Length: 331
Ligand code: NAD
Ligand code: UD1
Image (cartoon, rainbow, N blue to C red; front, side, top):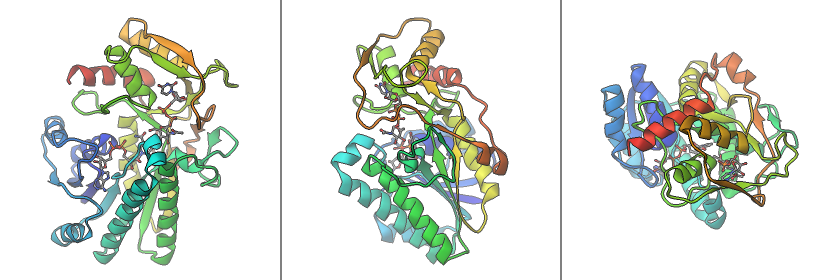
């Protein structure tokens, strides 16, 4: 089975490529390297002893994309390529809508033209917006009060996919709604290492641990949560990657969405304490005012994916910290 992976040199895509290659799938990657490095391909080869075919192209370049579909027959597309920085998306909405929506529409048109009907799409818990309850199930209405342009692109793409699946029942589409992916491959050879000052919790903790930033600011300790800090559903990226392979077997006519999360929320303070335990020394941190747009807590109800994808998480936040420390030591 030949799989086209868009965004396959990125953080999550590269982990899925590793799992696909390990399971014997043939893989071709498309990525414009706007947020990843070509050296990831060598690291993937070190882990799997296989090197996927790589096309450095932009999904916005429709003629070149068409050519790739003409040259190869794909059984399945996994679509990770997209811009994902929440704050940047608020500053540059047109860039985000163009990249994420036009890129996806180009891809879908090529798929339809070339009769490639199996699609797994990287969606996000952000599509739920602010539903008013912390445990998210797939039957909640999506799109309500989404706070960023990035989040809206994910919601809009899901709507496009639903319409497409109705218009053309040949399409078998699964949207996987990720909660908070953390960690990396246990080899420490691939992972996420954003440039500059990170927005997300895990890379921020790592930069403080490396001494590149002086201390972590915990945004808010007066929330109505058990310890006053926000709670999230952190999922190890290897568990997340395996969820994609489980989804392949569940593809069927129409559009279906699944939550990929652990179902167990963890607070920011608990994350700090776990890191300190694994790293064996204190992590400098202070309490700061709440960050605008943050919800106090939310987590996945993963039962649908547990049942229908026959998938569940096995790794912990401790595993994620251990693997991330190993990734940093390899840098
Ligand atoms: P990433 O930035 O590491 O990977 C995305 C890849 O897509 C990058 O390698 C980038 O170069 C590429 N890309 C972007 N626009 C492109 C274009 N027009 N043409 C070709 N390549 C392009 O991000 P990630 O964390 O691996 O996320 C993968 C997907 O999962 C994204 O769609 C993201 O929105 C989604 N997602 C991520 C998270 C998260 O916390 N990381 C959470 C929910 C959903
Ligand atoms: C954010 C995005 C979400 C995206 C996800 C993963 C928003 C509203 N949501 O989610 O769309 O899918 O990142 O990329 O931006 N925290 C600190 N100090 C820090 C950084 C974070 O205390 O320096 C706290 C935050 O307040 C939050 C938790 O850690 O409570 C997790 O933050 P983060 O990793 O940014 O993820 P989300 O905000 O859940």
